[in-house]
Length: 197
Ligand code: TYD
Image (cartoon, rainbow, N blue to C red; front, side, top):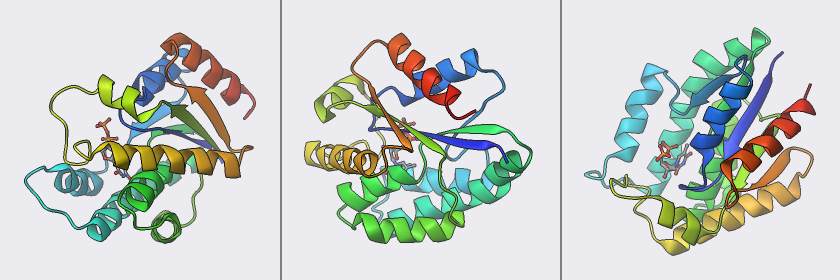
């Protein structure tokens, strides 16, 4: 079995920069961003992101869970079975924070549909890149997708949910200060990954 590492945090936290840094430093890592190249997930995510659509929050949560289920079955599980280390730029916690807390569906309810979707596949380690909501918002510019258009209260709720998840399972989370220099965030993440070996 390989290892599953998730990168989490709100929009503008610097997750994608971290993911890029990780793969440069450890080329053996497989870095995937949901929908991650699975065609079914790709199509579902296009639908969820479309600002022209009015997607009900429950439908939104189920669609993210469905896209994730396909990615896990088609891509992630085979890689893990092949002993690869897989880094996911967003995983279940994104749904807990955004749909569970942000959309107020309840973290437990969203956790349940995701446990079903993933067949219970939990990340071995979650790198939580933490920024205050205002910092994330300031870093995003133009071209916001349907979800990124949500307001400040939505992102404040998402940050609170991420904080609570990290506090509840400190052995599986590393909290990285996303307001700092990208190199510092990367070094701290690499240190955390070494401990997984
Ligand atoms: P993503 O494509 O990861 O973000 P980016 O805009 O950085 O490319 O995600 C798009 C949006 O979807 C983002 O605002 C986060 C949101 N999202 C959820 O609300 N729930 C989820 O489960 C996931 C994976 C993303």
